[in-house]
Length: 167
Ligand code: S3P
Image (cartoon, rainbow, N blue to C red; front, side):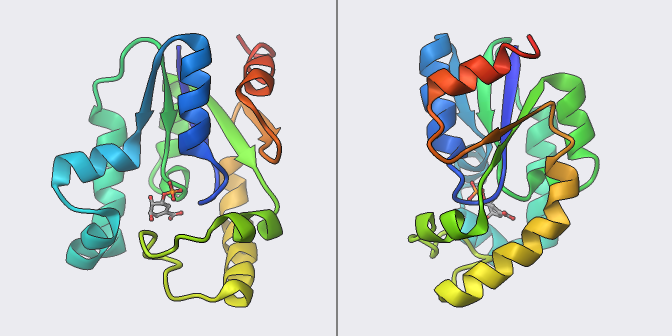
């Protein structure tokens, strides 16, 4: 089974993918890290070179062409579910889990912003407003996930429990 973790930047997708994969004894995959690996550019450099449109094309291509093992947990980039028909593709090809978190909690977790081009120049107040607006745009996509969990205080055990409701 392929489990796609999705949600806003800072909600903990990459860490939780590793913990859950550990618990399920399967592979953790981080699609942003795969983009960095394959392109030889950091995400910030990729945005710089090809713009956001170029990045969205590439991340969608990566999502569709990656050679997933049959059992794995995949951390997706925060914007990935909201472009093209990526959300539908993930729902057809695995179990999608939205790690939902309040904007205030996200701000407090997003300290290292330099590697995230969309928010790198924002202070805490600007970031909070930005996240509130972005979440409104993105929630219609995120909430197409098969499972929605509160990501605050979430551990791999609770995540596994939530998965049992659909598998
Ligand atoms: C983005 C989230 C980032 C990365 C890129 C764009 C977004 O991934 O894909 O900076 O649009 O929300 P993380 O959610 O892993 O930070």
